[in-house]
Image (tube, rainbow, N blue to C red):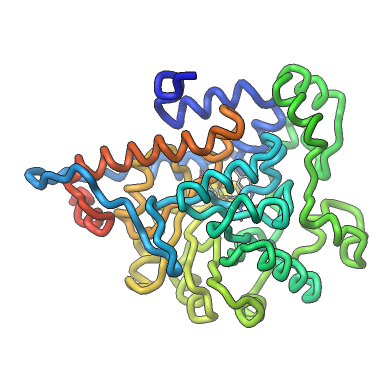
Length: 378
Ligand SMILES: Cc1cc2nc3c(=O)[nH]c(=O)nc-3n(C[C@H](O)[C@H](O)[C@H](O)COP(=O)(O)O)c2cc1C
């Protein structure tokens, strides 16, 4: 397959992916909440940022590298946690982790992934981060953390923007139940997408495998989705306790206000992850890019700032870096790559972004990422 000709941009991966997964799977991956204006706002905020090229600087081999928590990453992006990635395409977690490890970029495994830290850890190698939806039960929390650490995940990401499940109206319309049940409509949807259906039948119905061992515990025995039953809405005391329980770098994900960023840092967070959860939690939220500069200003240069929200190109990553991010994280884009091309998808996505970053930084006359803040159009 000539990837360059067939998939020259991430949007080509997206369109191909859409044609390969059932309707309810696309609804799961693509949807926001409410009228989905926060999703659109993320895109509009990115498009509104222009960067002005500087010339006569002869930049042809820009350095796209960034150092984070003592790791030198050759590229300024990584993979954000995606719950039930294996529903979108079987083996997605391992495919993304393996490509991230090969490229030397971070991969974050979700608490509610369809694969366990034990299964994904070897593929992630030294690039594994573990994302925590905060268990209410301290013993359960410690067990989960110990499992992640043993499996090689050295950086912990606490997601703080899901105090309760959001309403995902598009999922309801698509008939996706939680936990998943095979409704007649879902079976019909799946039959129309044979490659997905065969792969899924071979791999087994996707489940919240990491949490399965806890499903029978006291807190877990009520009805409903185990991923939500086990977790609490975290507060500052939760963050402080987690800080004491986890030795490695700790990232707080889902921050949109500068005061919250400062408070999380003061409670022991090593980095702040600016995000509106891909527009999936609160439809009134600002675009994550819009609030990024104020959070960078509040924290000063010493605290790493990660950011996500709508990356569809290398240019989007450079826009975020220019506005104060150390690294941009990719949510849906990683899954578009796996669904479009199978296990080979993420490596092609990374290669597309690497080429785009080099081309765009040369155009901007930026030899290093640190030069980008000066390229914002005045
Ligand atoms: C299908 C899907 C599942 C997600 N699951 C999680 C999750 O389990 N934990 C988490 O912290 N964020 C989760 N997110 C949010 C992403 O980590 C990330 O913040 C968001 O997708 C970034 O926006 P983008 O998809 O536009 O790149 C999920 C997002 C999507 C699209």
